[in-house]
Image (cartoon, rainbow, N blue to C red; front, top):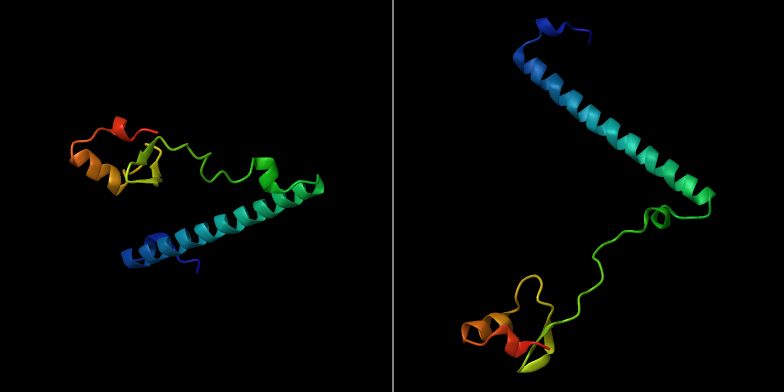
Length: 103
């Protein structure tokens, strides 16, 4: 395996590069896993989980209260954030304003 790089063909060098890249990714993956296990162990020794120490996994924050309701079906609400529901789009297209649907 101790072949001189200068004596290798372009294809051999590219193949070696692929192998090295894959080996580095695998190495990093193993080291991260070892670090995670060590951090979990240290947290456990102190009576905590790693999530408790890191503040938990914060998926989405607290839900925003709805600001608009469908006049035809008040159970359909919208916070005013994100994609507009179909009933909002239809109402706006028909000339209504958001103020008429405000809660």
